[in-house]
Length: 498
Image (cartoon, rainbow, N blue to C red; front, side, top):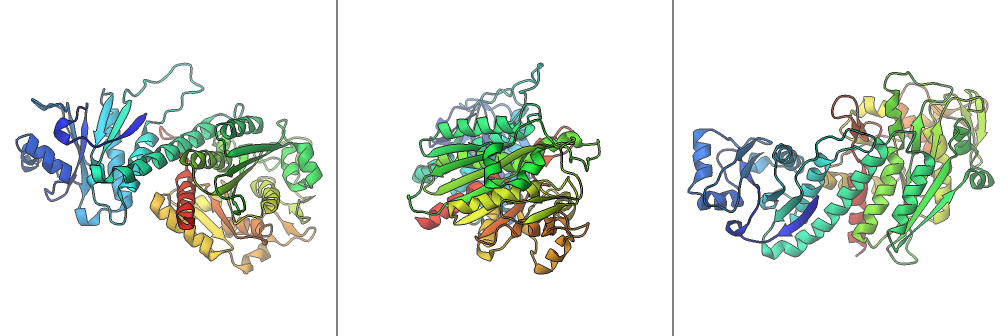
């Protein structure tokens, strides 16, 4: 999709469809007022007739305009003007692109940047238009021989006033980069596990690094990890025929001496549960256990596209978790890179086993902060559903920054406690700690486990088990979260430094 900024007056625009907003109680947006005047009060007549009310996410297509260079007008309901929030604005955008997809058109022009969303400027609104529209037109067809019909929409003009063109152009650049990152995350996650292996992820990381002059890549093999003492990580990969990879992307956009922000993403390209085998129903969705790793690669790509003045390291421990004669067994004890011994009580709690060694490895970069993201616990889905990702961490300022960025990005977080009392559940009679803490507070005890390996730096953990993909039905597939959140966090940090 081609997105661009347009400053032409509405009476001079040529497009297949012009998108304008409409509030409840017969209130017109600025562009709707102008279009109404150019078309003999047509919109006012439709409102008076009751054809459209302006309720949020309601749409009405006007498919014929005599003597106009605009072929169609799409009216999009915004709800009550005084109650329009960031999320309701995005909901209206979703309804707009849903209506556009049903039309056989090649171009559209959006006037929805003239809508007032309290606390947000045109740059933010441009970004949201691109992110929402691009998300809706994503279609995975890589492994299909019979291709689905392609959406004909090719160009989206985003109409803004001349005086905010520069600000809007900044939003355009950010929006396209973030949308591309979301697309990459969804594509990698939607690929089947027999294609998207640890080696495949490493190849994609190499390609991402090659596309940026400020990025390098290093891929550690199992022999390298063995020398580093990553016994916990390697214990997971033993059950798989696919060799594990530790992928490290290093983006140097900031000053040479600046400490990097380090992202660590769980990259389990398929999780059968190991000897503690998962139930067969829904096991196909365990190809999504690498969404954390995919999001790290995509966020580094987006940062490079935005040319952010910040240093970032992305670490992706990647493996499969399969049942095999050499796989971990319940009761086994392994030694982590940090020297702590771990009793494996459940081989399906493998994500923390690969993350703990990657988090120890992150220390070598002398990080400003470390943020890990992982589809770690089904307990997070039970606790929070599919709306927010879970957030836990050892630093209040970092967690507060992430929450603020999540609100701006409309990529929600909810913080859970990381109290010392929960550590009691990880006690083991045979090792320094166990890899599970029982049924109670599973998301918290998983983070407590990781916290034992992050005591030397500021750290936050994102549990994305409920938000990284949608299950079942026609909507089944990866969401691309939390790429918007992580990208916004990087933008915020860059702005704070400058």
